Amino acid sequence: MRLKRLLQILGPGLIYAGAAVGVSHLVQSTRAGASFGFYLIWVLLFANFIKYPFFEFAPRYVSATGKSLIDGYQKLGKWAIVSFTILTLLTMFIIQAALTVVTAGLVSYVFNLNIEIFPLCAIILLITSLLLIIGKYSALDKIMKMIIVVLAISTIIAVVSAFGNPIEHIVSPTSFNWLTDTHIFFLIAFVGWMPSPIDVSVWTSLWSVAKQKELGFKPTLRQSLLDFKIGYIGTTLLALGFLLLGALIMYGSGEDLSPDGTVFAGQLINMYTNSIGSWSKWVISIAAITTMFSTILTCLDAYPRVLKPTTEILFPKLIKIASYSFTIWILILTVGTLILLGYFTASMRFMVDLATTLSFVTAPILAFMNYKVITHKHMPESMRPKRWLRIYAWIGIFFLSSFTLFFIFWRFFN
Image 1 (cartoon, rainbow, N blue to C red):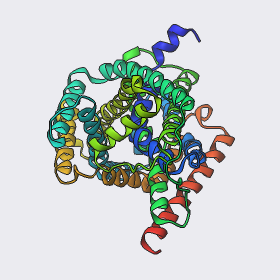
Image 2: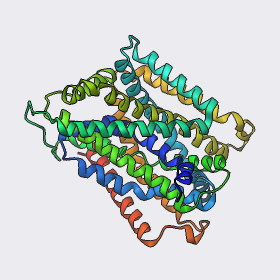
Image 3: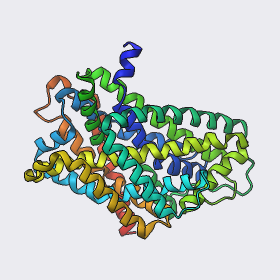
Image 4: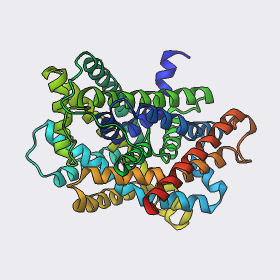
């Protein structure tokens, strides 16, 4: 494939990376390395491996049908649309709030702003909302390509520098204990967003449809999967990078990560600069802010984008306001997020753990729905996944379901 054509079709995979590389990487992966050293690397890689098929089904479905997974859910029956809509409504405000409070904390610290977190959250949401309402998909596509490049370069520089300047352990490092409740709860939250919630696959399918409209032609399955794999592998490597940074710089330092967003940002950046050197402050700052800005932007675009068609399917009369529904949902999401932040702004860790745990619990349902769509009779036979990929998916569903049942038993019956 020519480089020019590759750069032309790249988009949905990189936007997926922007959505995935956020709290799961900057906060959760860093916490994993800071708390347990290199031990949870295998969990990180396993989570990325086991969820892969359910994300790959998105570009495969769009390439076969030219439509999003929402259309596929509709063909399964009304139950699938209702289930997805309910899951989205239950999680979107919490997830957007978690992303916003982390982003606000970083911005406040890096630019030394003397502003309370809540109004800063409101400003960030207002700016990103206007950017999406005015620029739509085209603006998102162009911005994300630049952000991912900056993020990748700054993270690589930070990791290489950290390997050259490992810290000495000040306190005895903590080992992960499978019998400790707090460790298990962190593990659940860590896997919930690693590399991202499975509902992001639906977002990816909608971005792929938007990309086709922008291009004026439909990329081949090979081209679509290449775009997706670049984004997916990139998110895995970046998650590994942040875990390594946490392990190399924070593990055994005696410093506890704060649940307050601004304090956490200061701890993160100061520990890096103290270990790597003062020159790295802006490298780390750029990596952190671009990480969170990419995620908050993509999620703020994604929730209205998926709720527009689902609510029109469930409530056909809303088609009359179809041209305004994207904007209406952005406003609803923004207002709902700010209401939630008004109560829980002080605890970043609570917001993050709640959001990631909800994603963990809903993963088996969405994984099964994606599998049913991609193997449904309306899918062309040649575009359905091969037998090995179907077996791979069933193994993933088994593990995700087992983990969820274990969590429910551990949480409520232990």
